[in-house]
Length: 113
Image (cartoon, rainbow, N blue to C red; front, side, top):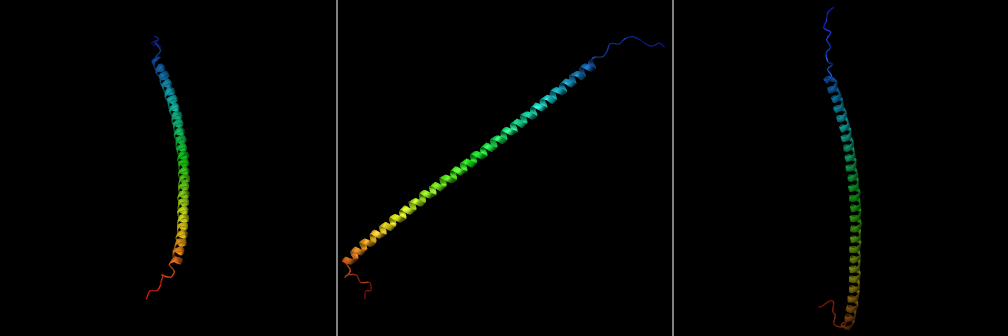
C-alpha cells in the first residue's frame, strides 16, 4: 500500500473566504435593520407632521369660521342700526309733514276737479 504520504499544506483560503462572507452577510443584515428602523422613524415623523398640519388646519378653519361669524354679527348690527336710523328719520319726516300739513290743511285738495 503505497501511497503518497506527503503532507499538503491546509487550504485556509476557503475558510477565510467563508469568514469574510459571514462577516459581510452580518454587516449587510445589520445595515438592513438600521435602514428599516430609520425608515420607520422617518415614517412616524412624517405621520406626526401630517397630524400636526391637520390640527393646525383645523384650528385655522375654526378661527376663520369664528371671524366670519363676528363679521356677520357686525354687518347685522350695522344693518339694524341703519334700519333704526331710517325708522327715526321716517318718524321725524312724518312729524314734519304733519306739522306742515296742519299749516296747509286748507290748501290741500286730494281730489282736484
